[in-house]
Length: 168
Image (cartoon, rainbow, N blue to C red; front, side):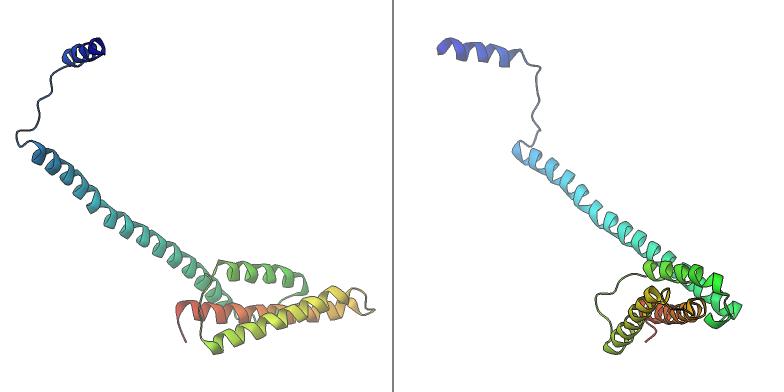
């Protein structure tokens, strides 16, 4: 056992010299605290940058939705003025705008009621559209249902957008 300790002593003695800090353990602890304080000072900056990036992304999404809605209003085309061939494309565009709006965990009761009613109307229209192909006057009925669906989708997008930016 003595031999093992002697061997270890020789190995340790062969290592290059290390000069401890002049202040001893206090110096070691002070150096460690300096590194930790620099690390601790960086996280608020990183958090602020992350919040800023999230706010910019949300602002961009809302601006895109607003420009799309403004373009609709500027064109002055109500859903009834669209051609039957454009109904499905308009519906898809409105669906994508609706999907781009951020989900709200909480909203006013009146807004939630309005959104629920519009979504119920959409479900009813979707059911009618799925059954209209079996009817003898399918093209005319289908066109009217698509016009109504686009109108309801337009209303839903406007209500959800207004809730998102806090107009109410």
